[in-house]
Amino acid sequence: MSDRPARWTSATVYPDMWTDPDQDPREREGPGPEGEAETLRDFLADYRLTLKMKCEGLDAEQLARRSVPPSTMSLLGLVRHLAEVERDWRNWIRDEERLPRLYGPKDADFDGAVADPAAVESAFGDLAREQSALDDELAVHPDLGERLGREEIAVRELMVHRIDEYARHCGHADLLRECVDGRVGQ
Image (cartoon, rainbow, N blue to C red):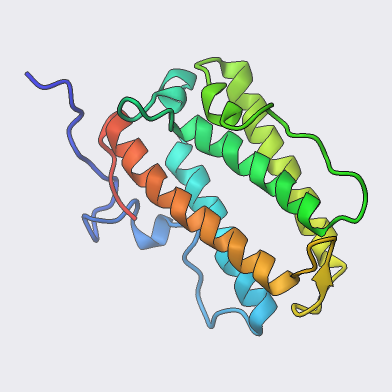
């Protein structure tokens, strides 16, 4: 008997998908967004939603479960990491004093991902708050070519970097979720 979970999906239309298209909140009717800024925001929103979907239905122990030694990566660690990087990106565009790290020194976001319901609630709250704060700060800079902060990063570059970070970690989330309960799909 194997301790590996059986692979499964809730999708019936396409068996390699996470869910059926008519149940997927990322699927929208009609044409895509108009313009570069809206397109970037739309892709970012979809990746954020994908991460959330990969975490849904799991308890604190499952969310904090590490993939394979010596990795410290877990779904909860990814949520904490993305909250930390959203905050760090705010530091990139600020001229003021840097905001402190949320979880402490390097890798504390992953190391502190423990199987505690309060830690899970806190991590998802941190992520939502940091996403919203950066979204609000960037909303007052509609020119994607505008350069911000001491590093003079272009708004466009920051948006693409955010999409890249979420896309990479959604790939990790695919594998982590499969390790937890065998659920597969895009």
